[in-house]
Length: 114
Image (cartoon, rainbow, N blue to C red; front, side):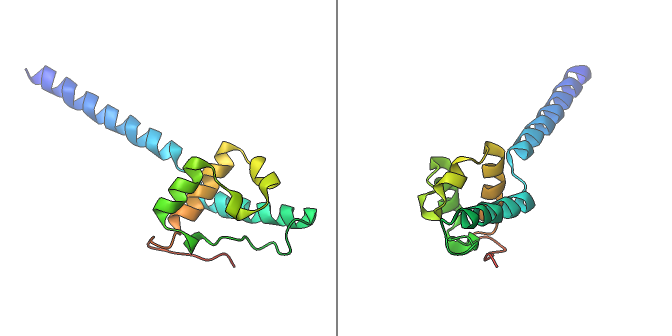
């Protein structure tokens, strides 16, 4: 009985550890996201598609739920620079999402792009 309970407990601990690890792998890197987000607009400026390298949408322009919906549906038209957005990898999009989502208007630390 004791061995069976110990086995179940260890299995549960290992399962939770792997579940936590897999969820952490899904999160993007906020710092890389901020950098990539700005680089998209710098590239767009060099191409002549925008007048300023400042991104159109600040992180606090939307709530966390709105950012989630925008990135889930991949509707980036409001950002402009469609050519640059279409070239981003899934990892880069995940990083940008993490940056925007974590600094949304309803987050603990809303932010504006400077």
